[in-house]
Image (cartoon, rainbow, N blue to C red; front, side, top):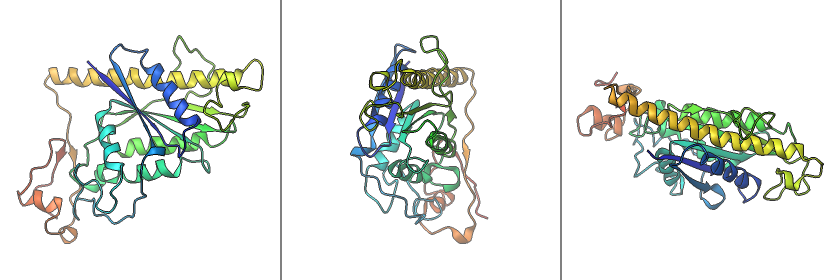
Length: 286
């Protein structure tokens, strides 16, 4: 059984966040021999913010994998396809204004059609993902926890996701920088804005306690995401063998007055299109 772990760096540049994600991904491979990892840097991607036009909602046009957005033609659809294909996801960001980067926030906002309230053909398409967060800041209390909460809230809103932290493992025992995730700082670094500003080798202090704790948190996060993704995947396979199927997502029954002719909602209700197996669709309009 293969378990796929995807790392996403939400930094607009190639620096500490990318390094941190790759450390967590490498550690994830220690859990199980068939762990496969992949990596996406948003620095290389074109991502526009959501304009709130609601065309992706099911009562209007309704998003699909072919058309995740009806306004922007950028890389968001392809990124969400990789998210849907992964079993575990490690999402990282620098702390900007005590929150995630603008690019990562835009990616999160553009995930609206996957949420239950959108009622699109994609609502419920992403589920059973294990999600862990990485946040890099200069100060030890530089917004890591508030940025992490944004990552966690996205994971919960996108569907049936399982949020995990950096559980200590034997090879990386406590103490560590954070139990909540790969929350690291560069305050002790000689190169805080470099590519490895949070690691022991770049530390100004001896012994490099801060760097060691940072590294342990990242490695523990990677291993926890992989371990949890394996458990979830085996659990789903076990339920299938027992003849137990996961309940589909109930779709919002939009008022008749708001449903456009030819929209996704309209097509399904009129029998012109069948909803995917992961949705329960209301048979009648209000």
